[in-house]
Image (cartoon, rainbow, N blue to C red; front, side, top):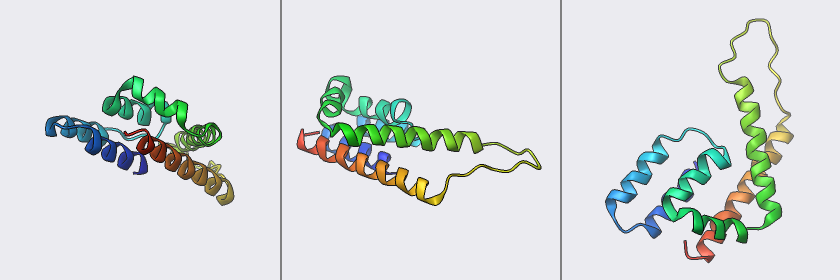
Length: 123
C-alpha cells in the first residue's frame, strides 16, 4: 500500500491529463506484488520515466536503498514459499517476529527516503 501511495502521489504531482492518471491508477490496481524491480520500479517508470527514475535511484541513500531492496526480496521469497502450499502434514517455516519487524523497518525507512528524495528532486 505504501508503494501504491508513492506512485499515486507522484502521478498526481507530475501528470497533467486525467486520462494518464487513470492509466496509472489502472496499473496500480493490477499490480499485486511488492518486488522492487518487477513491480514498484515498473510503476515508477510509467509515471516519471526511466531517465528520471535513474536520477532518483542515484540520489537516494545507498545504504537504505540496499536494505530496502534486500528486505523486499527476502519478504517476497518467504511469501512465495508459503503461497499456495497445501501439503498436509508439513510444518510451515516462518521467520521470527523480530526478523520480520526488522525487514519491515528497512522497507519503511527505504520507502520514506525514496519518497523524500523524489520530492526534493521535484518529482
